[in-house]
Image (spheres, helix red, strand yellow):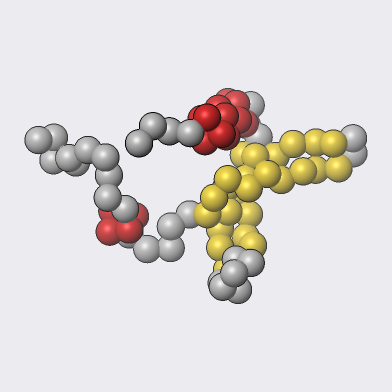
Length: 76
């Protein structure tokens, strides 16, 4: 499955924020479960206001057990 354009655009925004030093890790609450999450955000400014754009939360378990990668991590 090809990566959708909106995902590519979000990734490019994330890269620009990282290059500019405009990333933050903030604590928040999952709106569906009520669990505490640590959320990766781009930091922007709108006038005098700081604007946080969430991109996702950090895995709360071993990410190697949570995801199936699109490649063989053993190199095979």
